[in-house]
Image (cartoon, rainbow, N blue to C red; front, side, top):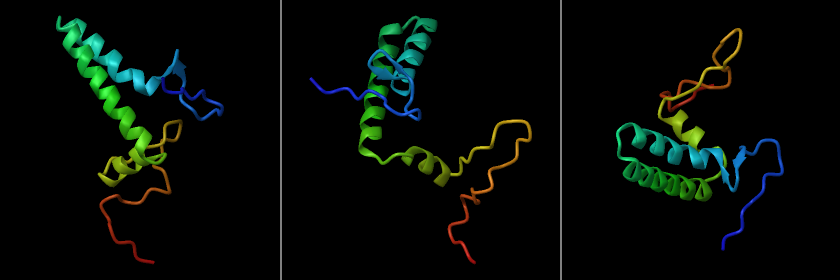
Length: 100
């Protein structure tokens, strides 16, 4: 039996019973999509496999690795809110050499 970590800080994702929401999302999406196409068992199993792969990836990578990977491949995010300005501390992800 593996120990389950209980969140102690405000930055931890919300939990549903023993699983975090980011672990449950692929499983639930697979179930809902499977119900729409009348193949719930196969899509739920695919969602379970994606959850398992994501959990292994997340546990073996440092914090923030996925955000850095998305940024490196050109997927930077905009600030949400009233003014919707781009974040100032993100440079162009396709510019690999920075000059002073």
